[in-house]
Length: 221
Image (tube, rainbow, N blue to C red; front, side, top):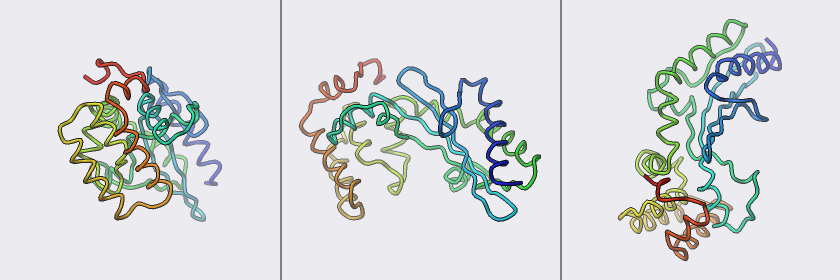
């Protein structure tokens, strides 16, 4: 199968299967918006001569958190800026943690497309959607970022924000630990953004942060 054909058929297969769960097509895949939370699904296809390798990634984002993060680094609020991925559920990552069998699917014929779509949706229905939904709250995301995510993939600035919003007693401990990590291996814009966020959190009370993001106490339960 040609790359363009594979991409088209995969998108069609996942569109039909995701629609009952509230996902709609958007520029880069599929998206479901529920209030201030959005969930996304993307399908990557890599072309190698006569075969393609395909993999899926689901992700979530929480808009009030994004608003605070944007304010922290001094950017003006804009819709295009408020949809980062706060929690990725990637096929490769799931495979690394022995949750999914393989890091990708080989696509050589049309039946491979149905096999991939059916296999992925079976996993999502049995386990994946639950994992996404558990991380689709501020409290659930804090648990993931600060306690489950490895240092290589963790967003340290987001971890600090979540800990402060939830008034965690280990917030100041994280400021020290995450700061050490950033000084050791982070560079460029990411390093600059971390320090801006750390300073922003230091300068604002928890209640002020909640006001910036439009967060209520109920959102933190």
